Length: 398
Ligand SMILES: Cc1ncc(COP(=O)(O)O)c(C=O)c1O
Image 1 (cartoon, rainbow, N blue to C red):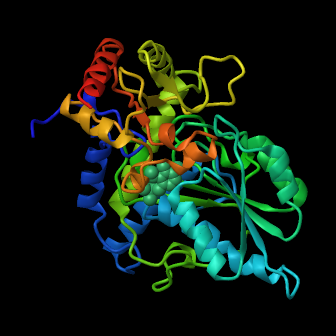
Image 2 (cartoon, rainbow, N blue to C red; image 1 turned 30 degrees about the vertical axis):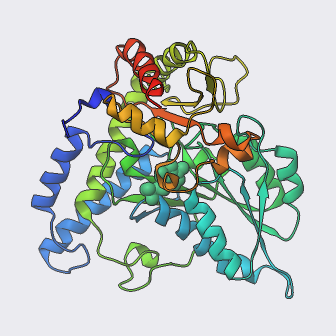
Image 3 (cartoon, protein in one colour; image 1 turned 60 degrees about the horizontal axis):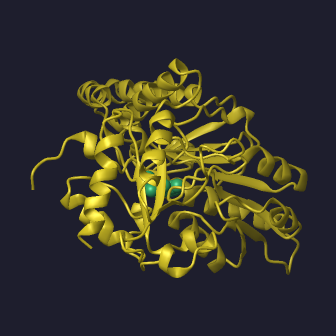
């Protein structure tokens, strides 16, 4: 296979390539702070010191005040630690004979659905809040579900497949008023809008480095001070007893550098991801093609609920009007040299119709015709010419 230029990689919601500064930082930290940070000798102390500096850096960049930063292997583990880790304490607060309830949305990432299924096995009830046609959670339905025995809500802040950003402040205020804990899956949001954990009405927040040009294999859970959390992985007592296993000091440093680069980019552009402008123009260009529709919120509408700024999602028909299969379209686009996705990378092996698009009210055929395009900071306006033509050629081959 011919190597393709990075300009043709349009799958940044799946993962991103390392920023060169991140690779450099990791190499330097690996060379200097390679030891086990739990070791009591000087090598170990140097590694521990390096790791704690990175932890402080990550905490500051995410606006933590008293919140703890617990490093995990990525988003999936962070979500499991959040949901399964706070369950024991919440169970003790539930009156005997009652099952505590977890509320999630109908458009969660499979990692949250799996953690919810594990809670169900522990005896929890799990309820799903419906979403509207662009993927926004029904706030009235959520409010009704916040009554006892609900103890915990877990929501995806920025939806990976259709880009919807949930109204987190309103959701958090409802949870606070009901005395219900809120965990937020911020894996797609961090790096694309400023996040200040201490100012958010959120108790637990999950993120992963590889979505923002950091390394794979490292993520974090931010934990509100005082929250009683139990580990999912026990052993050597690392991460304050919350996540056993020798910490990857170089990955943690790379995570901090990637986060710093993303936050600096936001600061340089007044707190707004500059990819949003190119994304909006690309939406306009792609929607000119007959038979191509947007899924998720319209970022060009003045009253849109919020959309990840680097994210486009489409439903695509053939030139003759029949719905295409998104997975086949992704393969056809790759034959044209473009890397996109048919939805969330993690669910791309599943059945053809997307559960997210079905939950938004799409019929099974269009729900199998999804295409996701997600941009990185390196993308240029040349896409506006090249991509619509490539998409049109690709669909003509199906
Ligand atoms: C919204 C969301 N949550 C969680 C995850 C899982 O993160 P990870 O792949 O780092 O385990 C992903 C990854 O695609 C995601 O997009």
